[in-house]
Image (cartoon, rainbow, N blue to C red; front, top):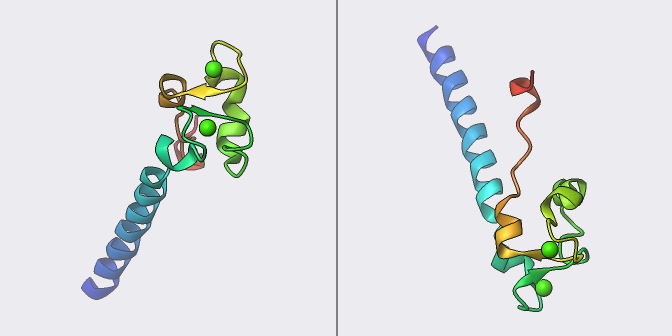
Length: 83
Ligand SMILES: [Ca+2]
Ligand SMILES: [Ca+2]
C-alpha cells in the first residue's frame, strides 16, 4: 500500500516538474529570432497562449512585443485551479 502511495506522489511530482520546465523554456531571447529586441506576431506564432493574449500584452499597440510587454505574459492557470 505504501508503494502505491509513493508511486502516485512520484508521478504527480514529475508532472509538476515537466510543467515548470515547459514554462521556463519560453524566453524572450528564444523567441526573438531576428534579435531586434521585439517579438513580432510571426515570432510568437507557434505559441497560441501568447497570440490569445496579444491585445493585452501589446500595450502600446505597435504590433510588436517589447521585453517589458513580454514580461506581462502569464502562463494560463491549470484548469483545475480556475474558479
Ligand atoms: Ca524580433
Ligand atoms: Ca508593443
